[in-house]
Image (cartoon, rainbow, N blue to C red; front, top):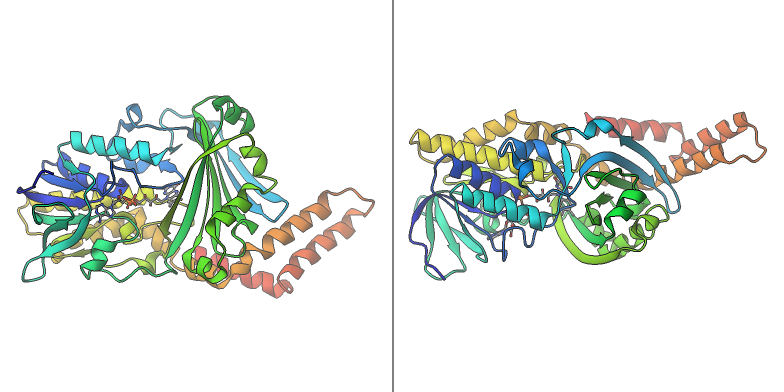
Length: 438
Ligand SMILES: Cc1cc2nc3c(=O)[nH]c(=O)nc-3n(C[C@H](O)[C@H](O)[C@H](O)COP(=O)(O)OP(=O)(O)OC[C@H]3O[C@@H](n4cnc5c(N)ncnc54)[C@H](O)[C@@H]3O)c2cc1C
């Protein structure tokens, strides 16, 4: 193993989207950057659905489409509400999404992260893989001045350390910069990759080329009464299917995550989409879903937190990697600007990163949905009562059985009201959700 004696401008912990974005931004600005990841290669252990939101990456690497390993761009979004036997769906499909620079793509993270990390290296950063950062090194005033790793040769020093270590945030926690992760602030997601012939995917999802893709997001009985959602995304020659629910709910219900995924896969609306596929990969990962109030301290003397380590996930819109890249870029820009002005990396100076975050969609969106985690937690019936009631009402409407339409309409209204113990229950739910949405 090579021993690193150099003193770096910045050390970035992690080579996920947040760490890569930070390292890329600083390397491009001419800083001497070391990036460290514990994986065998960047992305080797990373898990995502995965939808890539182009805008966040485009702001870093405008021509990324020429080289990045992309699967399909999304032309259709399906949103399903499931009960045990049915789904009520809203589908939005538009040929406008077949634009020159599509807005959303499906990707395979292991390939994507490898490409991104290579691009970071080409920009001039030094990358160490198969190396775990075990702790932060502080001077006698408590300023972070480097990292300890599981490599031989002692600590590695830098002016500033950027923590893009992902949801567990163990390095920050061990160094006393953040509290332990709470089970009410994280979801546990399990995911499988099912391989299918490319042509079968196109026929099955009504796609006209190997470039076009469909994504499905599902709520309802799929989460067995827990707060959670399922997803199914089309890649070129595979389909990614997964489900995530709050970790605290898994603990409470004692439902094994793989059983929940099995249930989702065997739902009559989902099963035909996977028929004949070969399952090749199973993975599980946490997602920070505590929202705005769960964001830990983000800066201190000599350190900054980016991406999942900062709880930057918008669970309502299922966005995470874009927030990771944006926070990484903003942190990188903050560091590069301080370096250019020859200013020290004190907590006060690094607060420029927090100010940039507040100005961005990252904090604006998380703030907007700040009530959502607690509202969903306190109203789990939203995931069970409504899918059943809607499905039942629609069956009444659609079955032609000699009952006149006015009677059917009355029955449908009765079904919906009964689901929540009357009109007042319905109004109260609508108010709670509208308030959390504001
Ligand atoms: C099942 C699932 C589906 C998802 N779907 C989507 C989606 O469709 N779209 C979307 O935008 N987001 C999605 N997300 C969220 C998205 O994956 C994350 O928000 C994003 O990966 C966060 O990036 P990050 O760089 O902060 O962390 P990570 O991607 O977790 O990267 C952290 C890196 O740090 C390294 N590391 C950790 N600790 C150490 C250490 N001590 N020393 C050295 N290296 C270390 C890890 O090896 C890893 O490479 C999904 C997440 C899951 C789990």
